[in-house]
Length: 308
Image (cartoon, rainbow, N blue to C red; front, top):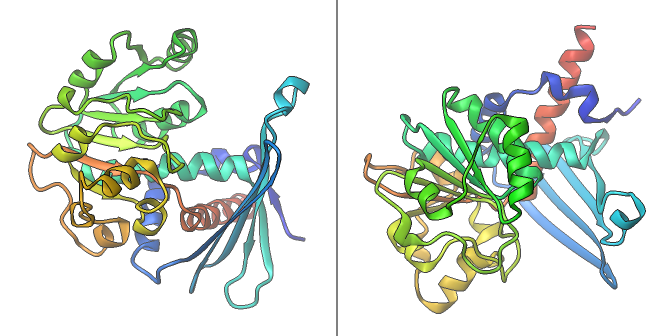
């Protein structure tokens, strides 16, 4: 019987560093074929994202976004991902989309830090106090077990509550928090930059997660001009996400200023070239990463089932 895999069934058996290993290995193979589809009914949306990687298989993740649900006590986003066998097209598993998205999103950023951040990074600032922030803390602690974490959010009460439950520090002054951090991870819904490039210092790593539409940005032009810029995938970021689409269209940066994506880095392209570099990774979170995450989740579920 085809399994339907939920967080309760498998999450205790998942490992953040193993996921980054899977991402690296996945980017050494065939490039993914990708496709997105949006359907709308007023404010309601159905989003389907598909990826096919030769030798790995097919994934289709579909989520419904119903903004009116919370008023009736239901989550606004719900969905599932279907994994298909590469050779036969047989359905291998159905996985809860929230589980896939949580691990894919934070794992994407973790790989960026693994490849680009200084190995002696001691302090992480998370900008944003939503659901992504807590998974980022879990992920970064897997790579930097002793890292000090601070959190800043526009909603101070939410940020304080998250700090209390996770053991993170509460950051009250965003500029001071950015200046003190070795890694700045942004997970906001901002349409105007919240991070100023003037606040940055040599050696930092910027992990940009929040912007996912053509009109969203989290850092200003100065930050881009000061940084060595990388993306998780050129195809899913440059023409679609405002973080880079807007400054590219304005001529602030050029295509050549985006120095690589994970395919390039997995193939040996230079990332950080010295301790003084400011590095920047735009986490776009394409469906190919959903597929790689889904395969890791299915493998963990099979190991757990086999061990009883």
